[in-house]
Length: 109
Image (cartoon, rainbow, N blue to C red; front, top):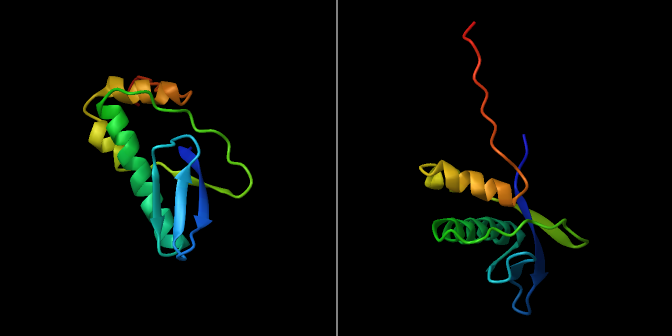
């Protein structure tokens, strides 16, 4: 099994809050009172952005490799059911990430 993740920079603000900025998604940023809350907010912001991109049929950027001082934020699982009614959208999104759906039909045992 594999997970889709996007690298993000987590930095402490002057007010003590943790700012999260996604390397491959410059319009996506969020924060939290601590690292745990910032990580949860980052997953939510990432999911919201990708969901909007999918619904608008926009390009989904391919995630880059994480560099030093970056954390990998997973794409939340709630995205799949929300867009599962359109198999071609899922297939197109996976293709942009360099993945494909394969279906195999076998005789019943």
